[in-house]
Length: 101
View 1 (tube, rainbow, N blue to C red):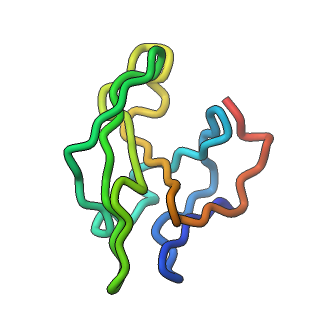
View 2 (spheres, rainbow, N blue to C red):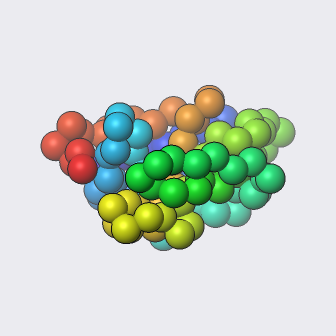
């Protein structure tokens, strides 16, 4: 089962994720949104749209901009609208190549 951990705690766990360009996107209902705090960081992707970034915080540890999602993606990426991806210190495990978009 795909799982994301930060500071030893599970912050996302899903039966399935969507993997795009090697990055796993978790459905929002499978993510502990209480561990995420929106930052001012935004980046643009030509085919996905504008990504909104979040600081991940668990216990006494935090990592700025370690999660992101496309709240209003472009048409080609509409399946991941609101889904959350992680990096920078968040360990993502159990992602199968069979779930690649």
